[in-house]
Amino acid sequence: MDIAKMLKQELSEEYFEKKERNENEYERKKEILYAEHPRLKEIDTDISLTALRCARKIIDKTRTAEDVSKEMLETLSLLKAEREEYIAKNNIDPSYINPSADCKICNDTGYADGKMCKCMKTRLVEKLYELSHMTDENKKCTFNKFKLDYYPDRDENNLGITPLENIKEVLMACKKFCENFSKNKRGIYISGNAGVGKTYLSCCIANYLISRGNTVLYQSAYRLFSFLEDYKFMRVDRNAFSQFYDYIYNCDMLIIDDLGTEFSTTFAKAAFFDIINSRADSKKSTVISSNLSLADLENFYSPRVKSRVNSSFLLLSILGEDIREKI
Image (cartoon, rainbow, N blue to C red; front, side, top):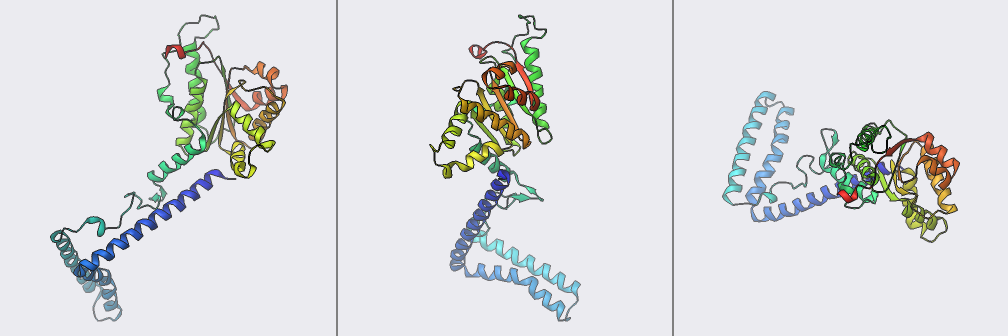
């Protein structure tokens, strides 16, 4: 299922309906206007027929093309001047004389100069956010707002790098990953203690990719595996949730937050491996945030999971302790 293509098709239909609705409203208003101002109708009819009448004169060879063209321009100029004077004199509402459009750039077609119009891009991002399952708070997270002040520039644990130096490297790696997303088919595994900024960073990645038209799904590990278990054992209507199930495997970017905080069950372990393995094989990226190190993955899940993450993910570790108390 090509979700991006499906969304663009939905938007095209939405724009077609909007344009048709506005055109119908314009025609309705125009009929009312012409009924009240028959002279305006006559002027508009003359304007629309002027070019046709002049073309006939050229075809009949009664006049030269140059003469007819000059006459047409003069006639149109006079008619338009009369029209403007009539409209001003009678205080006619502009919405009754001009076709309305929500977007003046593309006239509700969704495209301008052969490219998707800004208005359609905005609608596409809105639809992508609806699919992302991100909270309003998560939608505010951006790389530009990421605060480095909370990370100390002291190597208190003799690791050879300070938390500030570390987070700068992690931040740069995530930005580079996003900038090269169309070429980069690896995932990112972000590990670290609770409260060091893993979730915020994951949301920065999500918002960056969504703003550029990529399909993203954000889920906590607990919610994701709970849904998959309910879906497998038919505790939810499969027909109603089949598209969401497919979206987990086929969206451009799947973000699994707080891996390791969910209940450890045989099903969850199998489901997790199936997701990361299937998505990696399909060249789909996955971002995982967890308080589990790579070594912990083997104990918490399985050697297969550790091996797959190690081979298919960029491994990033955030140093330091909980910064939320400083916020």
